[in-house]
Image (cartoon, rainbow, N blue to C red; front, top):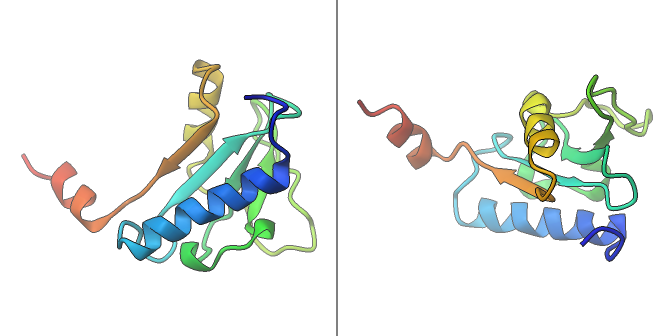
Length: 117
């Protein structure tokens, strides 16, 4: 997969996925996170910014973050910071070299089910 798609195409695909999640009611406001590995540098990845309404995101709302220290390279003109759950995404990308994309939600049903004993 690496090198086959440009970053803009991957951003558009990630945004379309988030819009589908929102349309199906799987994401509440800002609760979903999406990321994808940078095809030009596998040590970095793009992740959704914290606090953004997921159904209204634009390409500018996906920020490139660096390895290990999770320093970010977001466009400084954009208000926002990478998702609070960036370290979780970093762990998955570091542990699983075949992981290229991560989409996770905090849907109401998923949250309720995870709290059942």
